[in-house]
Length: 46
Image (cartoon, rainbow, N blue to C red):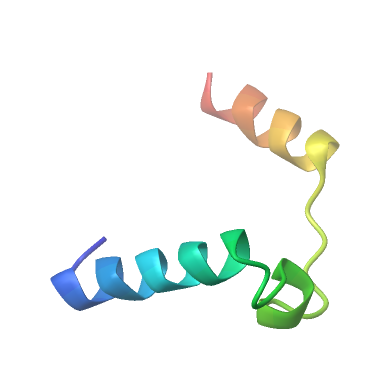
């Protein structure tokens, strides 16, 4: 996070997700990163 307002936005998004007011699909349409992608990225960092 670069600024306090970015942290507030992230906290607001997390709260809305937990309360079921929104979904990841609604907030990030078309995004599809999966477990295999994450594992590949982790391997690249080592």
